[in-house]
Length: 372
Image 1: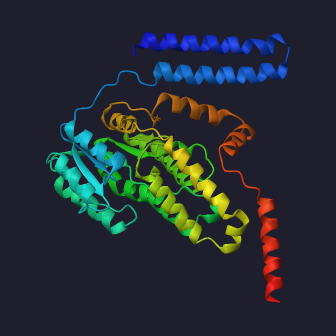
Image 2: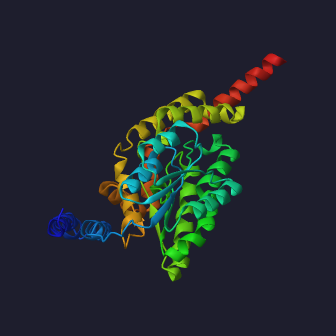
Image 3: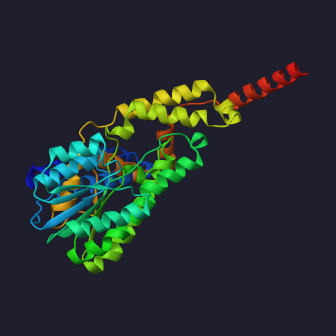
Protein backbone atom coordinates (compact mmCIF):
# COMPACT_ATOMS: atom_id res chain seq x y z
CA UNK A 1 0.00 0.00 0.00
CA UNK A 2 1.37 3.42 -0.97
CA UNK A 3 2.09 6.20 1.50
CA UNK A 4 -0.76 8.30 0.09
CA UNK A 5 -3.26 5.47 0.55
CA UNK A 6 -2.13 4.96 4.12
CA UNK A 7 -2.48 8.67 4.76
CA UNK A 8 -5.99 8.58 3.32
CA UNK A 9 -6.96 5.72 5.59
CA UNK A 10 -5.52 7.57 8.58
CA UNK A 11 -7.58 10.68 7.78
CA UNK A 12 -10.71 8.54 7.40
CA UNK A 13 -10.16 6.85 10.76
CA UNK A 14 -9.61 10.20 12.46
CA UNK A 15 -12.81 11.55 10.90
CA UNK A 16 -14.75 8.63 12.36
CA UNK A 17 -13.15 9.26 15.74
CA UNK A 18 -14.19 12.92 15.68
CA UNK A 19 -17.73 11.85 14.79
CA UNK A 20 -17.78 9.48 17.77
CA UNK A 21 -16.43 12.24 20.00
CA UNK A 22 -19.28 14.64 19.33
CA UNK A 23 -22.17 13.07 21.35
CA UNK A 24 -20.38 13.28 24.69
CA UNK A 25 -19.51 16.95 24.18
CA UNK A 26 -22.89 17.97 22.78
CA UNK A 27 -24.65 16.60 25.84
CA UNK A 28 -22.36 18.64 28.11
CA UNK A 29 -21.27 15.39 29.69
CA UNK A 30 -17.82 16.16 31.06
CA UNK A 31 -17.06 12.52 31.85
CA UNK A 32 -18.28 11.51 28.41
CA UNK A 33 -16.04 14.16 26.85
CA UNK A 34 -13.05 13.00 28.85
CA UNK A 35 -13.50 9.34 27.97
CA UNK A 36 -14.21 10.16 24.33
CA UNK A 37 -11.15 12.39 24.16
CA UNK A 38 -8.93 9.68 25.64
CA UNK A 39 -10.24 7.16 23.15
CA UNK A 40 -9.85 9.69 20.34
CA UNK A 41 -6.24 10.57 21.08
CA UNK A 42 -5.25 6.95 21.68
CA UNK A 43 -6.75 5.83 18.38
CA UNK A 44 -5.39 8.89 16.60
CA UNK A 45 -1.80 8.37 17.68
CA UNK A 46 -1.82 4.59 17.40
CA UNK A 47 -3.60 4.32 14.06
CA UNK A 48 -1.79 7.22 12.43
CA UNK A 49 1.58 6.02 13.65
CA UNK A 50 0.94 2.49 12.46
CA UNK A 51 -0.50 3.34 9.05
CA UNK A 52 1.91 6.12 8.19
CA UNK A 53 5.20 5.01 9.66
CA UNK A 54 5.04 1.30 10.50
CA UNK A 55 6.44 -0.02 7.25
CA UNK A 56 8.28 2.71 5.32
CA UNK A 57 10.61 1.63 2.49
CA UNK A 58 13.71 0.03 4.01
CA UNK A 59 17.25 -0.07 2.68
CA UNK A 60 18.65 -3.61 2.84
CA UNK A 61 22.14 -4.63 3.88
CA UNK A 62 24.31 -6.76 1.60
CA UNK A 63 24.25 -10.39 2.76
CA UNK A 64 27.70 -11.08 1.33
CA UNK A 65 30.19 -11.84 4.10
CA UNK A 66 27.54 -11.88 6.82
CA UNK A 67 26.57 -14.71 9.17
CA UNK A 68 23.62 -15.12 11.52
CA UNK A 69 23.23 -17.36 14.58
CA UNK A 70 19.67 -18.49 15.39
CA UNK A 71 18.57 -20.49 18.44
CA UNK A 72 15.56 -22.83 18.43
CA UNK A 73 15.82 -24.05 14.83
CA UNK A 74 14.42 -27.56 15.40
CA UNK A 75 11.01 -26.32 14.18
CA UNK A 76 8.70 -23.31 13.95
CA UNK A 77 9.91 -19.75 13.51
CA UNK A 78 13.59 -20.64 13.85
CA UNK A 79 13.61 -23.27 11.10
CA UNK A 80 11.63 -21.02 8.76
CA UNK A 81 13.96 -18.07 9.41
CA UNK A 82 17.04 -20.21 8.72
CA UNK A 83 15.61 -21.22 5.33
CA UNK A 84 14.67 -17.64 4.43
CA UNK A 85 18.08 -16.19 5.32
CA UNK A 86 19.86 -19.00 3.49
CA UNK A 87 17.96 -18.08 0.31
CA UNK A 88 19.01 -14.46 0.79
CA UNK A 89 22.67 -15.47 0.80
CA UNK A 90 23.50 -15.34 4.52
CA UNK A 91 25.67 -17.92 6.25
CA UNK A 92 23.40 -19.39 8.93
CA UNK A 93 24.39 -21.14 12.15
CA UNK A 94 21.19 -22.93 13.16
CA UNK A 95 21.15 -23.83 16.84
CA UNK A 96 19.17 -27.03 17.43
CA UNK A 97 18.39 -28.73 20.73
CA UNK A 98 18.29 -32.15 19.03
CA UNK A 99 20.64 -31.96 16.02
CA UNK A 100 20.25 -35.64 15.14
CA UNK A 101 16.44 -35.62 15.08
CA UNK A 102 14.04 -35.16 12.19
CA UNK A 103 13.63 -31.38 12.54
CA UNK A 104 17.31 -30.50 12.33
CA UNK A 105 18.05 -33.08 9.65
CA UNK A 106 15.10 -31.89 7.58
CA UNK A 107 16.41 -28.32 7.82
CA UNK A 108 19.82 -29.50 6.65
CA UNK A 109 18.30 -31.22 3.61
CA UNK A 110 16.20 -28.17 2.64
CA UNK A 111 19.06 -25.67 2.74
CA UNK A 112 22.40 -25.04 1.10
CA UNK A 113 25.90 -25.62 2.42
CA UNK A 114 25.78 -22.15 3.99
CA UNK A 115 23.61 -23.55 6.82
CA UNK A 116 25.45 -25.15 9.74
CA UNK A 117 23.52 -27.26 12.25
CA UNK A 118 24.92 -26.51 15.72
CA UNK A 119 24.04 -28.38 18.92
CA UNK A 120 22.56 -25.76 21.23
CA UNK A 121 20.80 -25.93 24.58
CA UNK A 122 20.38 -22.39 25.88
CA UNK A 123 20.29 -23.67 29.47
CA UNK A 124 23.70 -25.38 29.19
CA UNK A 125 26.77 -23.16 29.71
CA UNK A 126 29.14 -25.69 28.18
CA UNK A 127 27.08 -26.17 25.01
CA UNK A 128 26.76 -22.40 24.58
CA UNK A 129 30.54 -21.99 24.85
CA UNK A 130 31.01 -24.84 22.37
CA UNK A 131 28.61 -23.12 19.95
CA UNK A 132 30.60 -19.88 20.15
CA UNK A 133 33.80 -21.79 19.45
CA UNK A 134 32.18 -23.58 16.51
CA UNK A 135 31.19 -20.23 15.00
CA UNK A 136 34.72 -18.87 15.44
CA UNK A 137 36.17 -21.97 13.77
CA UNK A 138 33.73 -21.98 10.83
CA UNK A 139 32.83 -18.37 10.14
CA UNK A 140 35.83 -17.86 7.86
CA UNK A 141 36.05 -14.34 6.45
CA UNK A 142 32.43 -13.58 7.37
CA UNK A 143 31.33 -11.38 10.26
CA UNK A 144 28.65 -12.36 12.77
CA UNK A 145 25.99 -9.87 11.72
CA UNK A 146 23.05 -10.98 13.86
CA UNK A 147 22.10 -13.13 16.81
CA UNK A 148 18.46 -14.24 16.89
CA UNK A 149 17.29 -15.51 20.28
CA UNK A 150 14.30 -17.55 19.17
CA UNK A 151 14.38 -20.63 21.44
CA UNK A 152 11.53 -20.68 23.94
CA UNK A 153 9.11 -22.82 25.90
CA UNK A 154 5.58 -22.14 27.12
CA UNK A 155 3.29 -23.07 29.99
CA UNK A 156 -0.38 -22.12 29.80
CA UNK A 157 -1.96 -23.18 33.06
CA UNK A 158 -3.41 -21.63 36.20
CA UNK A 159 -1.06 -20.60 38.98
CA UNK A 160 -2.30 -23.04 41.63
CA UNK A 161 -1.53 -26.07 39.50
CA UNK A 162 1.60 -24.67 37.87
CA UNK A 163 4.53 -26.07 39.83
CA UNK A 164 7.54 -24.05 40.94
CA UNK A 165 9.62 -26.37 38.75
CA UNK A 166 7.59 -25.26 35.72
CA UNK A 167 8.14 -21.60 36.58
CA UNK A 168 11.85 -22.27 37.00
CA UNK A 169 12.07 -24.11 33.67
CA UNK A 170 10.33 -21.41 31.65
CA UNK A 171 12.43 -18.63 33.20
CA UNK A 172 15.63 -20.61 32.62
CA UNK A 173 14.90 -21.01 28.90
CA UNK A 174 13.05 -17.80 28.01
CA UNK A 175 15.03 -15.39 30.18
CA UNK A 176 18.33 -16.75 31.53
CA UNK A 177 18.84 -18.61 28.25
CA UNK A 178 18.54 -15.34 26.32
CA UNK A 179 20.97 -13.64 28.70
CA UNK A 180 23.42 -16.56 28.56
CA UNK A 181 23.51 -16.78 24.77
CA UNK A 182 23.60 -13.01 24.25
CA UNK A 183 26.52 -12.47 26.63
CA UNK A 184 28.42 -15.31 24.95
CA UNK A 185 28.01 -13.91 21.42
CA UNK A 186 28.27 -10.15 22.07
CA UNK A 187 32.08 -10.13 21.63
CA UNK A 188 31.45 -11.30 18.04
CA UNK A 189 28.49 -8.97 17.41
CA UNK A 190 30.08 -5.73 18.67
CA UNK A 191 32.94 -5.52 16.12
CA UNK A 192 30.48 -6.04 13.24
CA UNK A 193 28.10 -3.34 14.52
CA UNK A 194 25.36 -5.89 13.97
CA UNK A 195 22.18 -6.60 15.89
CA UNK A 196 20.53 -8.82 18.48
CA UNK A 197 16.97 -9.93 17.70
CA UNK A 198 14.98 -11.28 20.65
CA UNK A 199 11.71 -13.09 20.04
CA UNK A 200 9.45 -11.95 22.89
CA UNK A 201 5.63 -11.86 22.79
CA UNK A 202 2.66 -9.57 23.31
CA UNK A 203 2.20 -11.68 26.45
CA UNK A 204 5.12 -9.64 27.75
CA UNK A 205 3.00 -6.49 27.54
CA UNK A 206 -0.13 -7.80 29.33
CA UNK A 207 -1.11 -11.00 31.11
CA UNK A 208 -4.14 -13.19 30.44
CA UNK A 209 -5.50 -15.88 32.80
CA UNK A 210 -3.33 -19.03 32.58
CA UNK A 211 -0.48 -17.01 31.04
CA UNK A 212 1.32 -15.89 34.22
CA UNK A 213 4.46 -18.02 33.81
CA UNK A 214 4.78 -17.29 30.10
CA UNK A 215 4.06 -13.57 30.51
CA UNK A 216 6.59 -13.25 33.34
CA UNK A 217 9.30 -14.70 31.11
CA UNK A 218 8.45 -12.50 28.13
CA UNK A 219 8.20 -9.34 30.25
CA UNK A 220 11.69 -10.11 31.53
CA UNK A 221 12.92 -10.71 27.98
CA UNK A 222 11.57 -7.31 26.91
CA UNK A 223 13.17 -5.61 29.94
CA UNK A 224 16.51 -7.26 29.14
CA UNK A 225 16.21 -6.15 25.51
CA UNK A 226 15.46 -2.54 26.52
CA UNK A 227 18.51 -2.41 28.78
CA UNK A 228 20.72 -4.09 26.19
CA UNK A 229 19.56 -1.69 23.46
CA UNK A 230 20.58 1.34 25.53
CA UNK A 231 23.93 -0.14 26.53
CA UNK A 232 24.85 -1.40 23.05
CA UNK A 233 24.00 1.89 21.30
CA UNK A 234 27.52 3.18 21.99
CA UNK A 235 28.83 0.31 19.85
CA UNK A 236 26.24 0.93 17.10
CA UNK A 237 24.71 -2.48 17.84
CA UNK A 238 20.95 -2.58 17.36
CA UNK A 239 18.60 -4.58 19.61
CA UNK A 240 15.16 -5.52 18.31
CA UNK A 241 12.21 -7.37 19.83
CA UNK A 242 9.67 -9.39 17.86
CA UNK A 243 6.37 -9.51 19.77
CA UNK A 244 3.82 -11.82 18.13
CA UNK A 245 0.39 -12.66 19.44
CA UNK A 246 -0.96 -16.21 19.23
CA UNK A 247 0.16 -18.22 16.21
CA UNK A 248 -0.24 -21.88 15.34
CA UNK A 249 3.03 -23.39 16.47
CA UNK A 250 3.86 -26.61 18.38
CA UNK A 251 3.48 -24.85 21.76
CA UNK A 252 -0.09 -23.78 20.93
CA UNK A 253 -1.26 -27.19 19.69
CA UNK A 254 -4.24 -28.84 21.38
CA UNK A 255 -2.27 -32.00 22.12
CA UNK A 256 0.50 -30.07 23.88
CA UNK A 257 -1.94 -27.98 25.93
CA UNK A 258 -3.98 -30.96 27.12
CA UNK A 259 -0.96 -33.13 27.98
CA UNK A 260 0.79 -30.30 29.83
CA UNK A 261 -2.27 -29.37 31.88
CA UNK A 262 -3.27 -32.94 32.71
CA UNK A 263 0.23 -33.64 33.98
CA UNK A 264 0.21 -30.46 36.10
CA UNK A 265 -3.27 -31.23 37.45
CA UNK A 266 -2.26 -34.78 38.39
CA UNK A 267 0.64 -33.42 40.47
CA UNK A 268 -1.51 -30.79 42.22
CA UNK A 269 -2.28 -31.35 45.95
CA UNK A 270 -5.67 -32.96 46.53
CA UNK A 271 -7.07 -30.13 48.68
CA UNK A 272 -6.44 -27.61 45.90
CA UNK A 273 -8.01 -29.90 43.33
CA UNK A 274 -11.06 -30.25 45.57
CA UNK A 275 -11.43 -26.46 45.81
CA UNK A 276 -11.58 -26.17 42.02
CA UNK A 277 -13.26 -29.45 41.15
CA UNK A 278 -12.87 -31.71 38.13
CA UNK A 279 -15.70 -29.92 36.32
CA UNK A 280 -13.80 -26.64 36.50
CA UNK A 281 -10.60 -28.25 35.26
CA UNK A 282 -12.43 -29.83 32.31
CA UNK A 283 -14.06 -26.47 31.50
CA UNK A 284 -10.65 -24.78 31.75
CA UNK A 285 -9.15 -27.26 29.28
CA UNK A 286 -11.98 -26.66 26.85
CA UNK A 287 -11.64 -22.88 27.22
CA UNK A 288 -7.86 -22.74 26.73
CA UNK A 289 -7.94 -25.07 23.72
CA UNK A 290 -10.71 -22.98 22.15
CA UNK A 291 -8.63 -19.83 22.68
CA UNK A 292 -5.63 -21.44 21.01
CA UNK A 293 -7.76 -22.52 18.05
CA UNK A 294 -8.17 -18.81 17.33
CA UNK A 295 -4.41 -18.51 16.90
CA UNK A 296 -3.43 -17.08 13.53
CA UNK A 297 -2.30 -19.70 11.00
CA UNK A 298 -0.19 -17.25 9.00
CA UNK A 299 3.18 -17.97 10.61
CA UNK A 300 4.95 -16.11 7.80
CA UNK A 301 3.70 -12.84 9.35
CA UNK A 302 6.18 -13.45 12.17
CA UNK A 303 9.08 -14.70 10.08
CA UNK A 304 8.62 -11.81 7.63
CA UNK A 305 9.38 -9.39 10.46
CA UNK A 306 12.22 -11.54 11.80
CA UNK A 307 13.81 -11.36 8.36
CA UNK A 308 13.21 -7.61 8.26
CA UNK A 309 14.90 -7.20 11.64
CA UNK A 310 18.00 -8.97 10.31
CA UNK A 311 18.31 -7.61 6.77
CA UNK A 312 17.23 -3.94 6.97
CA UNK A 313 19.82 -1.26 7.57
CA UNK A 314 17.66 0.64 10.07
CA UNK A 315 15.19 -1.77 11.68
CA UNK A 316 12.51 -0.75 14.16
CA UNK A 317 13.15 -1.37 17.85
CA UNK A 318 9.94 -3.39 18.12
CA UNK A 319 7.86 -5.42 15.67
CA UNK A 320 4.31 -6.68 16.23
CA UNK A 321 3.01 -8.96 13.45
CA UNK A 322 -0.41 -8.25 11.91
CA UNK A 323 -1.76 -4.70 12.11
CA UNK A 324 -5.05 -5.59 13.83
CA UNK A 325 -3.19 -7.40 16.62
CA UNK A 326 -0.97 -4.35 17.01
CA UNK A 327 -3.91 -1.95 17.33
CA UNK A 328 -5.75 -4.24 19.75
CA UNK A 329 -2.67 -4.63 21.93
CA UNK A 330 -2.10 -0.88 22.07
CA UNK A 331 -5.71 -0.31 23.10
CA UNK A 332 -5.41 -2.92 25.88
CA UNK A 333 -2.18 -1.32 27.10
CA UNK A 334 -3.76 2.12 27.52
CA UNK A 335 -7.18 1.18 28.87
CA UNK A 336 -7.68 1.35 32.67
CA UNK A 337 -6.82 -1.86 34.53
CA UNK A 338 -10.39 -2.12 35.82
CA UNK A 339 -11.63 -2.30 32.21
CA UNK A 340 -9.06 -4.82 30.99
CA UNK A 341 -9.60 -6.99 34.08
CA UNK A 342 -13.31 -7.22 33.29
CA UNK A 343 -12.52 -8.16 29.71
CA UNK A 344 -10.04 -10.89 30.66
CA UNK A 345 -12.41 -12.26 33.33
CA UNK A 346 -15.20 -12.41 30.76
CA UNK A 347 -13.18 -14.72 28.51
CA UNK A 348 -11.92 -16.95 31.33
CA UNK A 349 -13.58 -19.98 32.95
CA UNK A 350 -16.11 -19.22 35.69
CA UNK A 351 -15.78 -21.04 39.01
CA UNK A 352 -17.92 -20.65 42.14
CA UNK A 353 -15.01 -21.10 44.53
CA UNK A 354 -17.05 -20.59 47.70
CA UNK A 355 -19.56 -23.21 46.62
CA UNK A 356 -16.76 -25.64 45.84
CA UNK A 357 -15.15 -24.99 49.22
CA UNK A 358 -18.42 -25.61 51.09
CA UNK A 359 -18.91 -28.80 49.10
CA UNK A 360 -15.37 -29.91 49.91
CA UNK A 361 -15.82 -29.19 53.64
CA UNK A 362 -19.12 -31.10 53.65
CA UNK A 363 -17.49 -34.11 52.00
CA UNK A 364 -14.66 -34.01 54.53
CA UNK A 365 -17.11 -33.99 57.45
CA UNK A 366 -19.08 -36.89 55.99
CA UNK A 367 -15.90 -38.90 55.48
CA UNK A 368 -14.90 -38.14 59.07
CA UNK A 369 -18.24 -39.42 60.39
CA UNK A 370 -17.92 -42.63 58.38
CA UNK A 371 -14.46 -43.27 59.81
CA UNK A 372 -15.84 -42.90 63.35
